[in-house]
Image 1: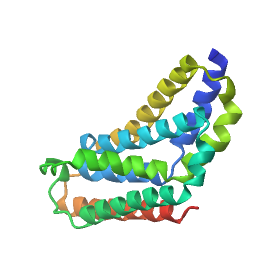
Image 2 (image 1 turned 90 degrees about the vertical axis):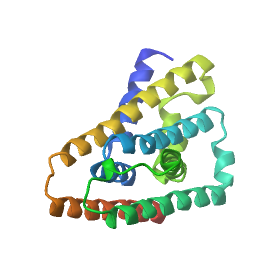
Image 3 (image 1 turned 180 degrees about the vertical axis):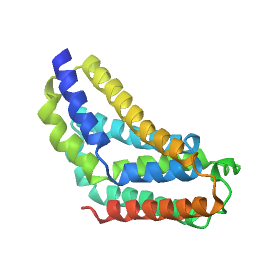
Image 4 (image 1 turned 60 degrees about the horizontal axis):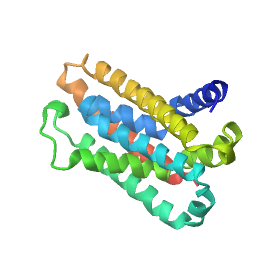
Length: 204
């Protein structure tokens, strides 16, 4: 794929990824309450979901996947349910830093799968890869090398952008020392995460 085409794709994709939405709200909420490190698996799950949709588009399978709308509804609601569970954990968390609490067994895997499920069932992501991507990239002429280039660029952009949001939220969290303020942050971020789940579930 020529450099001009890659730059156009990179610009449009970055704007799509960086625009605030439920996914970013969930990432920021997670990082504010538990720290950057424990938000990373969630980010990687979201990025992997984008890679799955990119692959479907490149292979011409998007129409087939649209025929399995019911399956994607199940995936979406499963991801939303997990977000609500995380929101409840944040709301009821003790005042001490959640980052210092021992991670539950399999927590990273569950967070990864939660992020993956949210992305696979998020209409915003589907619209980009099903409708907008073909306008930017000639999928009919996409060679294996060109696909690899687009895939690497996709992973670089989404991981850098989302991890940037998570890192900024983590830096803000470290400025908080008051237990009362920390309790408020836990509850606000829990509410934000629940709101993100509702927003995603309510979309078509």
